[in-house]
Each structure stands twice: as structure tokens, then as C-alpha cells.
Length: 529
Image 1 (cartoon, helix red, strand yellow):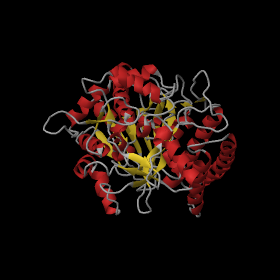
Image 2 (cartoon, helix red, strand yellow):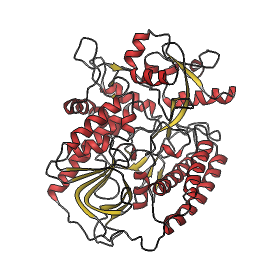
Image 3 (spheres, helix red, strand yellow):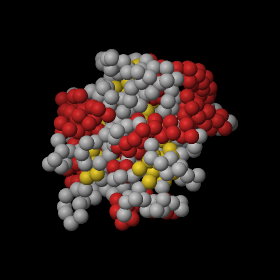
């Protein structure tokens, strides 16, 4: 018999945004938090650097705002930037109250602040070089202690259910979702008064990424299929320094290392960032990633090197203990030798369009964190602003949901159970794996750090063919998590490519050889479903 579950708020995703929303909602609400795998298996857990916030007397919100606007290459929405930056100190105080153990200055109760690319001040509060782990484990523990919150692992959302899809009168609103229970293999019906998508970005669309396997653009794809607009999907941030090693999978070397003096070098030991930007290693990520990509292609090399060995060994091991231990296990002593690094897909700057409370075009449907497009990041996300965005907008969403529940509590409409009576068990899972591999390869080759119109057109042709195969597979066979993730990734890949083709300039993270100059008037790329 089909399972139907009713909640006041359904939160899809267990990273910083989803967990913050759950904790900020009232304790008398019934809340479900869905995780595709383990609760901590989210981008938050793997974040090394920290959270950007104005916490020092020599810093100012005006400076943080200005740094963000500069990094965003003219496309940041200043109201969103100001709102996020102003919310920073309160967000940090809240995290501390939850028990997040940030690193302190020596012999002090003041937090240690570091500096990263694009920032004019030290304003990155961190927990050594594993900030995400400290935040994720702390918030998971706090949510587990909430009697009104059900934490449900191994659940993959399939699609959003809206009142329009059910043929109900009145403004279109979210009323729930279909969710695959990976343990039972059954699709469950979740009815909810409010739905929040906090599923992260879509960097798994690329062959090389710093993200965990769950970053498959699920929330973006589901919102698009439900009828939401998306914006600026062409701005995919490639982190400049991901470890290049055959035994390491997606291990990021934090930007904070460059903030503490690490230098990028060619194989012969010569530095090169001074040839590209006066800020050298502390230039924004798009500039550093393009410089590395250029040097690798120019010299025909597989990687460049990040060297911090000129700093005292005790300084390195104290500031970067996690990286030090991990690389020592791989035979690299960062106190004595340079680290082989390459750029890797890292962050989706575009996403589902939302208002100041993170509500989408559909009533009662919210998108928070990397899934959303708030206008904060513009054409290039500045380091450590992403976690800050998660907290500030999740708090705003919680406040908005509380207000709407108090003034107009909605009923649960009748929703049809999932019908898979006409499908059969798949007998060729190799098709899914082959298509997944093909997608990630041509996205890396054709829609990567440097683009051309011809490459983008080739990628669009390929992705449309893949969609036909996947839609046929989806219609005729029982669904699996691999099929759902591939379906979402191919959808998001099309959105990325269409946005990239629409932008006839090079700005921030979108660099095309056919349009190398900036247009006079910056504008968002908005796609309508």
C-alpha cells in the first residue's frame, strides 16, 4: 500500500540551509528533513574555508558589500548583498549559540579570522580547515534533538506537487512532493503546507568537481519542471585548487591557504599569477581558475602547484591540520613540497529565482542556499559568502513561513499516489551509467572554464539527444536514484548551456572567446519555463 506522510514543512536537503530552516521554525510544527544519503552528506560538510562576516572593528559592512560587488562583476543585486552582509554577525552569533566551535586567536576568546580571495579584510571565521564539518555535525545533532523534526535518510525527491498540477482553483502553490525511498524502492507521497528545496548546486554535471556525488541539481530541475524561473545558470564557479592525485577524489585545497601566503607555481617552480592580476594569488576565483587553465594548456601540463612550504611547519600544521594529514597519507608533505592542483567545478552561482524570503514563483515553495538565485553572487561568487547566504536566507524563509502559517493555515489537498503500474524493471542500467559519463565529459570539454559558441551549440545538440533517451527510460522503467539524478543533471545542463548561449559577452565566470568584451549594461540571464 502506498505510503502518505503529512507535514507542515517538507525540507528537501540536509545541508546548512535546510538544517538552519528546520531549527528556526517553531517547535509546534511537524517538519521533515530529507537527505539523499547520510545527513552530513552535503556540500556544507566538505566546506573547508569558513563563513564571511564582519566581526572585526577594523572591518565594515560597507567594505564587505563593496568587495562582493566587485567580485560579482557588475551583476550582484545590491539589495541582496546588503541584506546578506548585514545579517552576517547575527548568523555567526546564532551558530555559536548552537555550539559550533570556531577557531580562536591564541590565548583569546576572540575568533581567528582569515582572509580569502576578493576580500579586503580578514573576515573569514572558521573551524581550522574543516569549518563545514563543524557546522554540519553541530546542526545535525541539534536537529536530532528536536522532537518535532523527522530526519529521513536515503530519500530522493522525484518532483514537486503543485495545486495547478492537481487542477485546484486559486494561486498556484506547492502542496507536497513524490519521494523515492531508496531502502524500500517505493515512491512515497509527502503532503506539506510548505516545501523548501535546499538540495545544493549542480557541479556533478562536470567531469571534475570538488562536490560530493549528491550535487546533481535536483532542486533546480524540480523547480523548473514545476514552473519556476531560473537565472544566471551560465555562471559555474570552478575552484582553482582541487588536489590532482590518482588516489584522491574531489579533495579541495581551501582558498584560505592562499590567504595565508601559498603561491601558485609552474612545474619549474616559477610563479605566474603576477602575469594575470595585480592581486596575484588573492585575485577572485574566476581569474585564478582561468590563469591556471591557460598555463596548463599553454605548457601542455596536467596540473600546476600550490606551495606554502616557505611558511614555518608549525604554522602550516596549526592552520591546515586536515589538509596536512590527508596529504601526508597520500605521500605529500606540504611543509616541504608543493601540492599538485587543478581547477574543478565547485559552485552554481545561478539557480531558482526567489524573493527576499527565498520564496519562488510558486507560493509556499522555497529555494534556499546554492539551489536559489538571490542576486548575491552576481557573475562570480566571492569566497565564503555561500554559507553566509544559507544562514541569512534560511532565517528569512523561516520567518516568512511562520507568518503565513499564522495568518492562513492551508489544508492538505487530495493527491494521487505514485502510479508505476505500467512500468517494468530496468534491464540495462549500463545505459544510465554511459549517459552520465557522456554528459559530464562533454560539459567539461564544451561548457567549461573557456567557451565558444560552436562548443556550446555542440553541447546543446548532445544534451537534447540525451534527454530523449532519458525521458524514454523514465517513462518505461521503474525509477532509481541514478536515473533521477541523471534526469535532473541533464535538465540543469540544458539550462546552463541555454544561459551561456544567451550571454553575448565575457563576464565573471562566463568567458567566451567569441565575445571577449563586456557589454555596457549588465543584465541577468532569465529563463522562463
